Image (cartoon, rainbow, N blue to C red; front, side):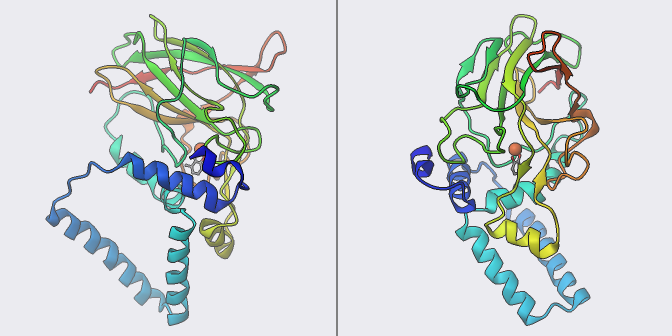
Length: 283
Ligand code: MBD
Ligand code: FE
């Protein structure tokens, strides 16, 4: 996956191909009955038909849609398209009965099996990795208030240029990705750098939709997390930065008020620090 990208530019097609490959490896466990497929596919198609009638969609518009859909696949942008414009509602439905921490979408750039790191750790990063140093620390507990010893905090995020390792060229494989194993008290201390806002690739099909519709292509700067512990539901979350650009107008509509960090300068002047605790629901 990385070698395939190493001699290419950070194009939509290259990052899209990596995201498509990753998603296809994940496979699908869904065993959906014909009745449910009939119901869901039927309703989605009816919504399309209704829109065509309501707005008197022309053949020229239909042909443009067809060409665009073909291009989404050619650019490998189905993971990006779905995670930006659809996943937030799937997440909302899937987690509506949770009592613990709020989560949000996973997005297209998760890679499992990041290097395992101790409870206090620095994420893999390059010498002089650009960006303001950030100490991100906290505790993982159950909804009953029990610390979850040995909980795992998987974290991944973009660099200061908005690029993710394994989805852009010339970045070390596990840069800014790690699996931090919390201590006996469920505590973790992660040293990293603050990511930059993320711009959806503008040179591919998703970028074409964005410019054709007059939208913007930005997500606010964010940390991605998967927090887990035996006997508890996996929490997939993102954390944002108070006052950051696009916190109020995320193109992926994945910001929730509970997910906003407000880091403060460290007393020794070496960057920022913030504490954020995770509460996991029982299985
Ligand atoms: C991202 O980094 C992301 O998190 C989502 C949801 C979509 C596109 C890029
Ligand atoms: Fe992201």
